[in-house]
Image (cartoon, rainbow, N blue to C red):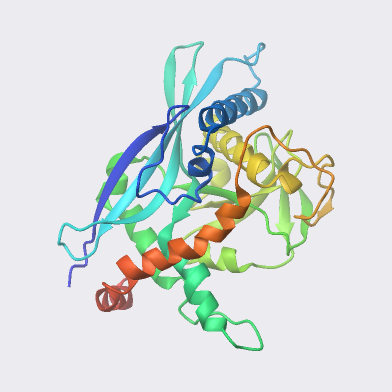
Length: 324
């Protein structure tokens, strides 16, 4: 059995000329924006929003609000589990880089940010649904998320990851509309006020199996907290500029995709529960097909089942059982 799965990393710049590759999950935020007749204007507008948000947060020694710009690279990770040379698209994340136009330097940002995974689609849109089919109550398989979590941790610990990236990933997601978040007294100069959730969610438990813990912060100029998934010490392992690159990128995507929460006209208070039916919000001028996004998740899960889970099921089960 091959315990050293082979990972291959590919990178493509996310700019106004970006076109999704055949292996990219088409429900991914940036891939959704890059389709249709408005694709180039969508991308141009989203990138401008990212840069404006970055400069608003990195305001020191930046009187005109134009010192920095953010470059985004889509990092696609393929995996060969059988040593046969056949690769399956494993995960896709974003890597930020910061351009300081005042000093003419380029600064590494954070890898992670957006997170995309066919196997996660399989777990949530195929396996979980089949497990609960015709059952009176909702339940989760005992080993739910274990294979995905071990594959992710294996990649982050791999020589391939270490050769390309200097720090562990940080993933930034929307908060859950089923939970209540209470603002604490802890305040970070960039991440803002920390919020504490009233209970754990299935998503949190899933990401915990990936080796990631979560904290919730509402950055300055934001109207709702974000969920930050990370390894180690989020507040001290990353510089302010690195954190701002993640905030500006993901705040932009969430304003487009989750305007009811992140482009709401009222700011989250001390006790906050997100509302996806909130009518008091503003839409961005960026075209985003949310209906299509939700419909395609199951198709992508079926794709993972057909081309990855079933063909390599025995091998994957043996590997998962022996992985530590």
